[in-house]
Amino acid sequence: MVASVGVSLSMACGIPLRLSAFPSTTIRATLPHLHAPSISSRPSPLSSNSMSQPATTNHADVVVQYVVLRRDLIDTWPLGSVVTQGCHASVSAVWFNKDDPFTVDYCSPDKIDSMHKVTLEVKGEPQIKNLSEKLTAGGIIHKLWIEQPENIPTCLATKPYPKSIVSSYFKKLKLCK
Image (cartoon, rainbow, N blue to C red; front, top):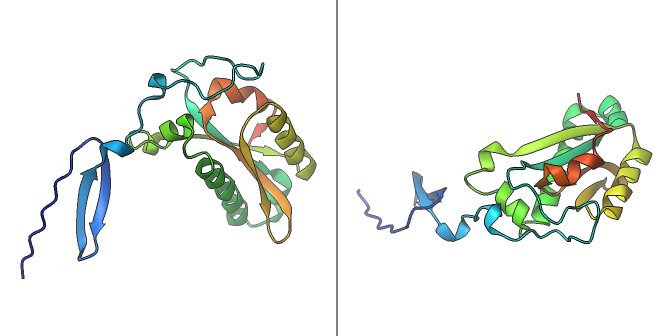
C-alpha cells in the first residue's frame, strides 16, 4: 500500500520530524520562526549598571557555559553520578533561561553542534557555595544543583554568556580532570 503525504514547509533551519503513521520516515523541515537571529542584531540583555558586566560585549566573543563540579564527590562517587549532576545543572540553567538572547543563540540550530562548555572543579561544598554567592553578587545567572533528597549541593552551571563577561569568576579554578 502506498500513501501520499503532502507537506509544504519553507526552509531556514533543518529540524528532523517523524510522522507517527510512518515511523521509518524522517522529514527534514525548516521552521523559520524557530531560527534565532544572530546576537549582534539584538540588544544586550545585560544591565550596564554592574561593574562586573560591561555595557557592551565583543560580539566575536564565544558564548560559553561554565559547569563546576565538586572534586570531593568526583573522588568518592561513581563518575557517572557526578557527570549526571553536572548535566542536571547545565540543562536547568539553559531551560530556566531559554528566552535569554545568549541562550537562544547558544542553542540555535546553526550552533547546536558547536556549543562551548568549560568544566571546572572546586574542592568541596564550602567552595561551591562560596562560588555561588560570588556569582549571585556579581549578577551572574547560574543554577546551584542541590541533589535531593540528600540536600547536597553537588555542582553549578551558568547560563550561557559571552566568555568575556564570566571568565573572571572562574580564572582561579582548575579544569576538571
